[in-house]
Length: 68
Image (cartoon, rainbow, N blue to C red; front, side, top):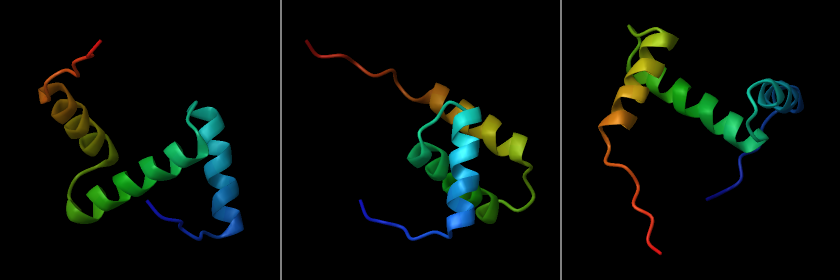
């Protein structure tokens, strides 16, 4: 894990979006980075296509097992 330096204006955008989306600032930034990375790797997909594919991929994963 490391630090990422971002512009103050972008940080403010992340802060506002994180409030609306009920995410932490870090979780919102991570979401945007992940979606951006996937969009660059898959330029023909829309945002909705990317999110749908991620939801389907998450559904295909085995559920977490809680160890007591």
